Length: 114
Image (tube, rainbow, N blue to C red; front, side, top):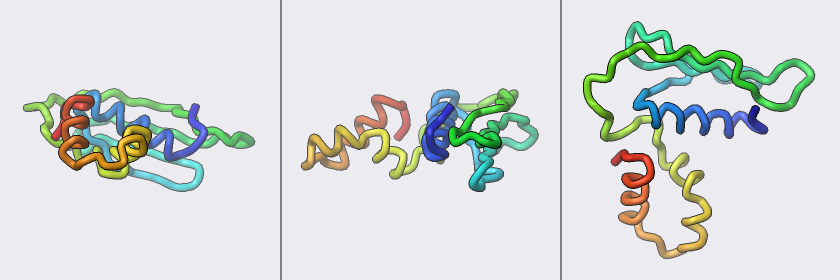
């Protein structure tokens, strides 16, 4: 369960990065969030929604990926600057003079992406 749609979205993206999969938003509205794998023919998807009479988001369907990765991703399309800022917010605030190179190194070390 997730307090907000944003938290659900970040959890899905972190899961996609850890499994070397790329997902695209299929449906996103105030009560539903569905992402699907970008690989042609792959049935992988995640469906989250807010149940009736509830305020928290729940994931109700996760279809695993059956696509085979030909090579590891060096860059992940779902790893955006907004997500990096969200995940590293505390560190960035504590070190106000943090250089971009430090952020790049941290991303490489933590998530193994350039």
